[in-house]
Image 1 (cartoon, helix red, strand yellow):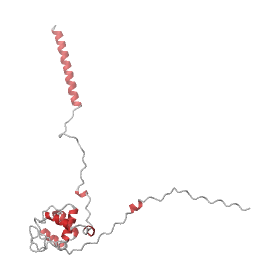
Image 2 (tube, rainbow, N blue to C red; image 1 turned 45 degrees about the vertical axis):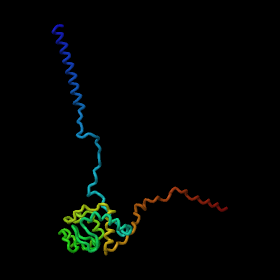
Image 3 (cartoon, rainbow, N blue to C red; image 1 turned 90 degrees about the vertical axis):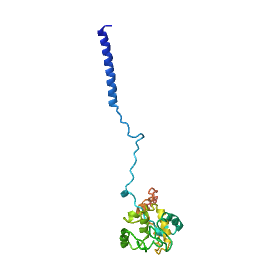
Image 4 (cartoon, one colour; image 1 turned 135 degrees about the horizontal axis):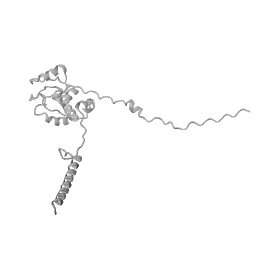
Length: 214
């Protein structure tokens, strides 16, 4: 085989290789795909509503819920508080003040206990631990009274707080139980939602024509 023939064959093979290589690179560029940082499927999750956009919790109707709540339920829940508080009449203060008679009493007034300046300031403008005030304090002490010594995270479940207040109400409280709130009247929208009276009733039959006098 002459050198000229060999050069033609080699040149053809080289050209073919360059074409194949070029097509492969072009395909990789056109269909390039970046792998995900983490394996798995991308799932869109709706963001939870912010605290500012959440629905505010409605205060319990104390006159309705307390009479049907057993103080024993609250006594069981009070075990979470027993490391800091005592509940018996004349009981000693601990890390926190004795809580006998606290509901209806004056905030920051238990003898012998050194309250925080935040609680003392709160007591100056809130002379009584009312149902709603004590409920909100037990729910989130640091949020309700910033700077209080009470570092307990709070009872987040409303049912637990209702039971706890029922128990505190049984411990020498003189705070009267509010009257149950009246049932809400039906809204105008509900009244308007009533089905309208049917309008497709057959019209009354026409009275027979009076015969002309003869």
